[in-house]
Image (cartoon, rainbow over all chains, first blue to last red; front, side, top):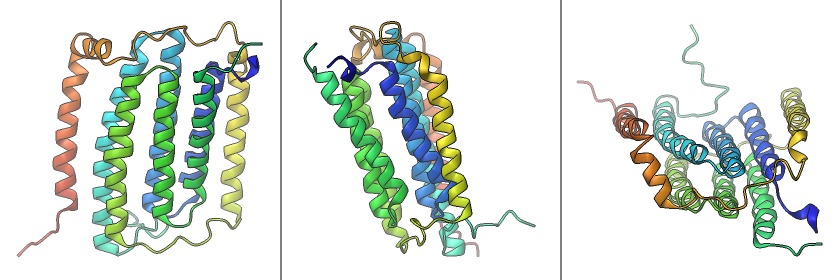
Length: 104
Length: 172
């Protein structure tokens, strides 16, 4: 059962598939909140690859980076959802295809 | 012929669950079900961190992502009372292009990463010394003290910014 044992490649493949799913979601979905959640998915995929590299080299710096990414992602989530609420107040819609307030 | 270890079992269970959660996020028409799929994904990521012996990060993952951020997202979804998104499963030219780009990206990265499939050179470390709280806390208070303090400033700025942006404007 040697081929079942995960190595760096296995974890990176999971991270890669998650990142791609998030990227496809950002490109195809129209609901603002779902697009936002897809960005969170991409951030998490990168976190997984950082932890994997940290484990591979037995080095703490990757884990520290994951810690900081999580903090910034929390800040980003708060501001992003506030923007979505403000948008909904003004347009009663968060379909990102209809949001063109910067157009002039 | 070695027997299946706990790490192998954790990896396959939670790896498949993580990908299933991501697919659920991508293909669910209702935002609330998409959010719940993302919760599945976040919990299985915590399991993957456990299989990598990063216990501290697994705990933080459950607390920050599955706890705090997802509660916030679900709260906003319920607040806005959105209808289901139409056309999630139909194929128009833009969606086909997006999926083609996605598969191209996967193929490209697999090609780049094929060197990592060498099991002996790129094996995971035997024992992960930095998964516990203690070494990470020590690192935070020595090498990473300045970034650690900056995080508090960023969180304060985000807090104030969110209140300012989402506040109801009542100008007289």
